[in-house]
Length: 271
Length: 106
Image 1: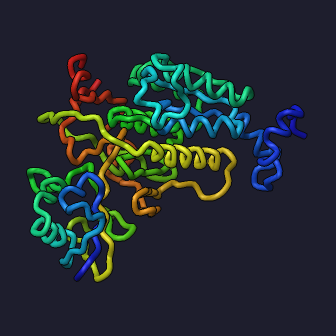
Image 2: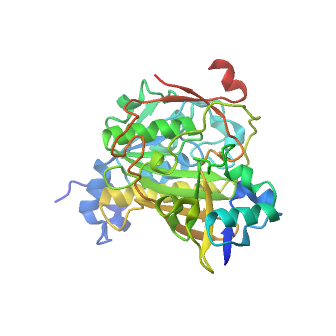
Image 3: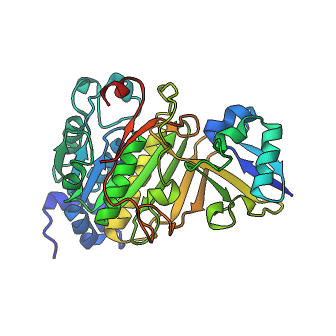
């Protein structure tokens, strides 16, 4: 049988009594390895629920520090953590919630230099990043290493969710082959977002990750879920693998990782 | 042919905040010409300077990406639903932020 402690049997009892999970599924969750890229609006709810569910190994990469303006949506952090690194703050919250979870921290910026090493030990990557360069980087690295990328993104009152698993379906570049070419740079404003919106999307990312670990249900591969909070609509669109995709197509032209740089405001000065 | 077009948040300013508008045409190209007439500015957001659909915006007829049907010539029929889906990340979209990248290949 499974080697659960009495405390674990109680903690996970609502999972264990589900036939679709059971002791076997709970063991899988405890053995699973999930990487959160970003402990922000999407990573917070995703990480919090994955930890509660007993996903036993969670990696967290975030370079930023907690800021007061994050707390409107980034629920892994709190007032007393302002100024603290987000990955560290996330680890504290997660360990308080569930001591079963081993958290590995990466207090660095993801780049072509470190991504392969960082994702190496993880099966599922939760993309909760806030910028396009990192999304392309994560996509390409996942394609090269056959890892599963649970993708969530938000804009004001809307969100998009899908799973990119290039052996079984499309990748991010099948949808959007490349970021726009260099050109004129418009001003980079702070974007507004309904605080609870990334909550909805991040929790859906956690649901998809857990389904993948348990191998239950139908994963959101090859389907884009669109959520519009204002009209309360969930819609699904079909995503197809593009045989001309520059990274996962028949004749790929991208064979190495690319660091695109966000050219905006203060960031541009350092690039 | 009258179709329903779903307008994404970044374009709502152009449609007086209507998330859904109706349009006429027999294919996607004609639909966008109709939209441009009624909501000036839409076309330059969706098409680039060379008149090609921007690569960080995808157009769907119902559930299907037109790139895998007939591109802009994909025909539409009465009651179809057209969606304009931009790439989004971190609360920003690419419709209004063209050229935010410097591409530096390693």
